[in-house]
Image (cartoon, rainbow, N blue to C red; front, side, top):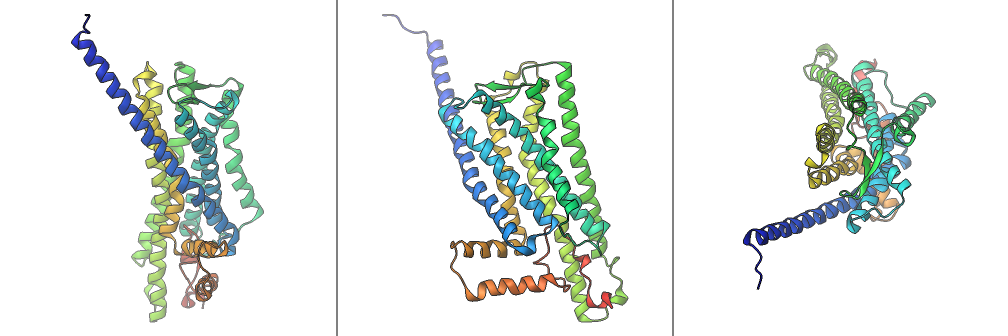
Length: 372
């Protein structure tokens, strides 16, 4: 009777164990991405509905956040949901056109998110540093036009592969279409460097500069450099000044957390992409590492509603009011009135922090001493 060599049996056993381990990890990735959908889809939809219905949120900072929520909602729907189905079946289930569109939308929503973060940071910079006494955040036709540009600009930057500039190809190991990393050439390397500088280095250097200016201004306010002592001649005005410093400091942190979450979610996929582009053999990058990086990237579309709920009392109040309207929470005679009373206080110039948009400076709301 013929006996298999011991080395061959050990090799087959190790391959079987590796295959089982890989399948278990893939199942965990699928479950993780499903959780992202379960939390992210209703969370972003709730942000959109709350900002749309609550009239006090019809300001530039909050409208930008709602626009970002729309981007995250579409990203989860067009990218994550399709990928889940294909990972479960271990093959691409749709047409070649849909496969290419899937890769197109991955790039589109990344650029769209970067532009939104730049816009939100700049609005916060205007409110706290550039125009602290005059910025009101109200919507206008001009601001609506530049918000529309956030959605239009990524289109020509992502459509190139459909006209022969670059390529979207099917990767059977990932069960989806993606950038054609296997095509190694100087021209493609130049395109990669161009996009890396244009949509990674420059935007986040700009955001870093804006945040540094905001933190610097907030620190000066805290040290009373922007609030002369002779103006604080009563307990009420002193309380207003202290509250203003706290709000400005908090505004300087809010969007930084959103930007930081974005970086944490996208650094793994950037790292994997650079490795795949620079290595001679793209198969040297483990498939599981790529899958994990993609899964972490999708978390960015889930975390923003969580951040808003933790950081902003006004947003939490708006969400509660919205959930009462749709019947998910019991109606309360005092609850909504209490929220409305806070809103009314926040709409006048008393410096109420709960009604301020994310990233809006309260310096524009002057104390009674300053307005005299």
